[in-house]
Length: 228
Ligand code: CDP
Image (cartoon, rainbow, N blue to C red):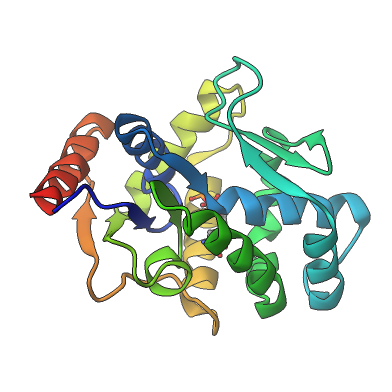
């Protein structure tokens, strides 16, 4: 069998999807698409334009009308990709604590998801893509050639997120991060449309106690097995 052309990686906040997804894509020479960055960009727009996170209609309109693009890094400042909103670079702004606080409410709305999913499917249709998110294997690319569900305990995920943010000078308390992660897990798992869950045919990879390098090797082994 050839190497899987469309690889879906899902999992909760801080499980390492983005780091590992980007590395897998680089290794295979595939496009990497972090769909969480798209929902985060809509949250940035909501904050900038003063749209309430419950206002589904206006959020969907802004998602539809503002050109959200994710492309190769335009600066060498540690970014894995550049996120533009109407030409404006929001690559770091999408990681602000204010965005963490509202992004799951913004992503809960079916009309917002419809706009995002249409764009994600358009990008996925060309193949040779690693797409990461919450609903890639279940909704966006249900016929992906390989589905991975990456997970870890909430404590471990809060620890990793803390280190990642501290490396960029954004120091937040471990308790706040754990609280934030548990709150987002709950919102993402309990929403009616496209909840966070492993697809029945996903390979579940637990990463507690494993380094990024080990988890990456695990994923690459699964890719290699599927290519035989
Ligand atoms: O990086 P982190 O794991 O913290 O989150 P993210 O992947 O950037 O996603 C941020 C939020 O966007 C999630 O908590 C979800 O609410 C939402 N999201 C989603 O609903 N569906 C996706 N495919 C990706 C993200």
